[in-house]
Image (tube, rainbow, N blue to C red; front, side, top):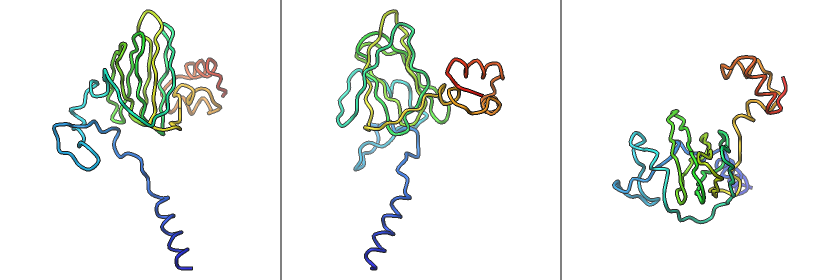
Amino acid sequence: MKMIIHIFFTLSLFSSISFASVQDFCVADPKGPQNPSGYSCKNPDQVTENDFAFSGLNGLDVSLARLDLAGGGVIPLHTHPGASEVLVVIQGTIRAGFISSANKVYLKTLSRGDSMVFPQGLLHFQLNSGKGPALAFVAFGSSSPGLQILPFALFANDLPSELVEATTFLSDEEVKKLKGVLGGTD
């Protein structure tokens, strides 16, 4: 009986532990010390857009999706609460970026062969900034990355308009217009 109680207590203890990151991202600092899990993190104040964009990529154990963007096409601000994302541009030009929890914007124009990493849980977007179609592949560090698209979360639902207005500082007219376009109700 003690064994069963001990196992239950241990399982209960581990189920209350959060494995979420305590910081938005960790960009490896190859000049810093190494530890058993790899390089230490770069100081966030020294991180730039170039730390999230690459011309080559090698990775395993990820899920993939194809992204086709017509001229002027956009993937609106969204988040993946369950995984980081890597975007690899195959054709065209894509303007991509994300916003850290400190509200710092990391923005980059990507061309064929370039890639960019979007840290788990942070708002990010992609738009075709070229003249023709753009093609990219996205990879996630999980088979279930989750997806929440910000405009739909705010305006494609039955959250009362006055609450949306109060929490977004948008006018009644703006909220009703966006709810009308995206299928939300008052």
